[in-house]
Length: 81
Image (cartoon, rainbow, N blue to C red; front, side, top):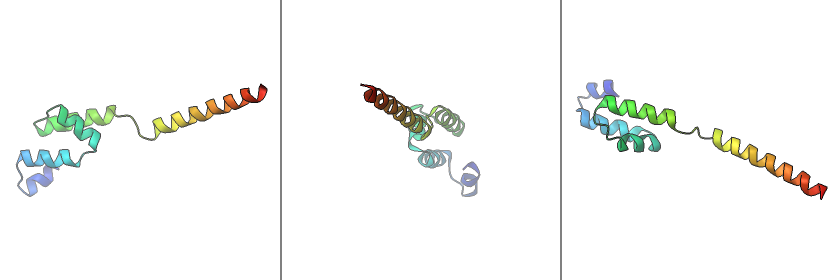
């Protein structure tokens, strides 16, 4: 983005807006909360948000697997009664 910004001669404020607008919503929300003003701050905070965000799918799959296991165990116990 920096290279593209230089190619079209955009100031840092406009480039910052473009970068933040292009981020995933949870990452841009974190970057905005941190009040990042420089491009380096935006990059640093975006990396932190990306590394600390829960992995989509993995958590849901794990929870669904655990729920299915609990259902199976409950069904076995109900059959014994």
